[in-house]
Length: 312
Length: 81
Image (cartoon, rainbow over all chains, first blue to last red):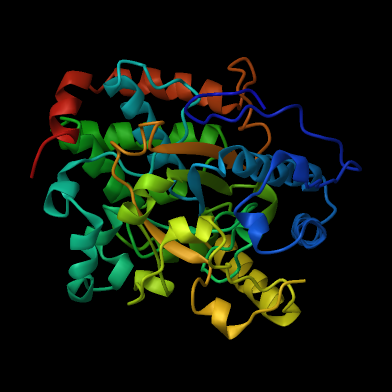
C-alpha cells in the first residue's frame, strides 16, 4: 500500500486468480478484528467469504490490507466498517466538496465522505443529544434526522451481527431503499448554492451519467421520488453480484474521542442502557460477538445479506 | 474457534452507530478513513487508468466546477441552522 496521511489506499495490480491468500502477520501487532478469533479462523472466514472466482484474490488482498491497517493503528484508534453501494456517488461528491473547501489540503485520494452538511449538526451538536431524542424519531435510525448525522457500522471485519456484515457485503455492498438518492443529491446541490431547478436536475442527470460511466450505481440518482425499490425490481439497477458495486469505508476513530461519537447498537440504531465503552473494548476488556462457529447463522446472514444487496 | 457465550454477546453484537461530523472525519488527528471497493479497476489511483477512482475524481471535479461556486457552496455547507 502507498502511505497516505488521510487514508487513501493505493492497490497493487490485482493478484491472479490462483493467488487467493489471506495471511495474518502477528508480528505487526494486535488488531481489533482479530481480538475476536484466532488467525486460522480469520483466514478460514475470509477464504469462505471470497470464494474462488476471478475476483476472490483481489478481495482477499483487500481484507488483508484492512487487517494490516488495523494493526498499524491499533494503539490509538478504534476501527469500524461501513458497507454501502447506492450512496457511492453521493459520498464521492461530498469528498470532492471537502477537498475544495479545504483548499486541496485533503488529497485527491481522500476517502469518500458520508456526511458534509454541518447544518443538521447544529440541531444535535453532540451524539448524546441525538440519543436522547432517539425515541421520538420515526423509523429510528431510518429517520432523515438521524441519517443526516450518523451511519451504521460494524465493529469488526468479522462481525456478522449487523444488517451489513463486512465480509459478506464487500462485493455487492449494502443499501437501504426507503429513501430518494436523487432527492439527497438535488438537496446537496441546493445547499451548494444552486437555485435554478432545471439546472439542478440537469446536473443531477449528468452526475448520474458520470457514475454509470465508472460503473458506480446510477439508477438511484435517476429515480425521482421515493419509489427506488420498484425501479430496482423492474430490472433497471444492473445490480448483480458480478458487477462488484460494493464499497467499504474503514473508519478509525481516535480512542480519546470514540466514546463521544460512537455507540454500540441493536438493529435500527437503538442503543443499550449500559456502560460499554469502545476504549475498554480496544483494551480487550470485552470481546466482540461473532458467529463464525455458528454455520447456520452465518449462512443465513450471508444469504439474506446478498439477497438484499443484489436487489438494491 | 470462538464460542458465542451469552456473557460476551451482551457486550457487543457487532454493530454500532457513528456520529459523522465532517470536522472529525477530515481531521487525521481524530480519525482516519480508508476506502476499499470490490471493483479493482475503480480502486486504482492512477488517473491514466480509464475507470479508476483517480480518473473519476478529475471528471467529477470538472463537472461540479462548471456549476458550483465553491465560496457559495461553503456558505451553504457550513451554514448554521
